[in-house]
Image 1: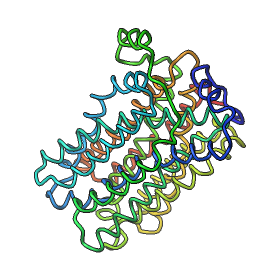
Image 2 (image 1 turned 45 degrees about the horizontal axis):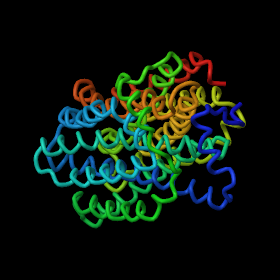
Image 3 (image 1 turned 180 degrees about the vertical axis):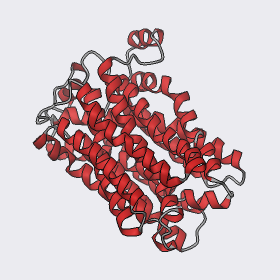
Image 4 (image 1 turned 30 degrees about the vertical axis):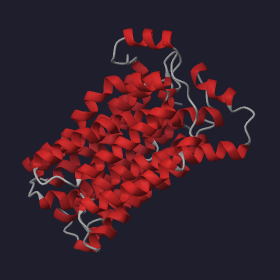
Length: 406
């Protein structure tokens, strides 16, 4: 049962710094970290909400869109070996600010391209800064969880999911008033930069690595070692984030091309998914503490598969929306739980453990959508969603491979 946090020494260090801090200060710090998660989520959701428009504007087929989306994991893979090292050397409180600023800037460029190669170049840098920001913000989340000494990681990812829902609503508004993606993205960027300006000082303070430690770290391998526990956690996260990535990038296209929903309801599938994912993450910490992480993860896998197959076998507006809601509820607690377990692995720097697991996990989020484009082109979008349903079953079975999950 996850009623307490079993912290390694490196995670307990910030606890000493904030031991005498007032609860109001700690709550403000937690809010600031949550808002950085929100900012990262809104950045991605803003792009995702306009994918159908950009697909139509550039006259992309499903296979073309799949090729274009591969630029994101290419950027992710390039940055993967360096993210943890930079976070350790300079401290997550500094790197998360730099990362989110560049991530938002990359989002703005996504709306400026008029050729396919323009979009692919922008998506490449979008992937680079998403990996860097992902490691930094989750390190902040783990340190904050250590300070509070109770499961709160799920609530941080809830803020990310809430941003996804918010991004969908903003995207719907922007489409209805006829604003093109470039204006939409610029407006969101300004709002997010304001949020960052008012909250970066309240993050968990981290110190850069000492010169001797930085030099020793520089001599180590760029690729974090993946012990068996971290490897299985990464695979579980991968299965969840494949499903999550499909919902972000293809739910709108599925409702438009398979469900044949009216234009005003095309975004319903994405919105249904995001509502339940956000809701699940805000209650996920309490549910995990009550029933245990193992049982929650097993049920989550079943919900992911069940939701996918409901949308496949009953491709109508209401059943498909309910199916996407089940998928959202299923994925809601998987990644926060996996990251929390990874960051508390004894003997491994939290940011490096997070890099190892989240990089494997996040590859599912980035590689899944473009692969679906090729599968959909070959056998149809409905069949490709049926194949994704297998990953939920995988989560339910793989949970038994990790002894740390109870």
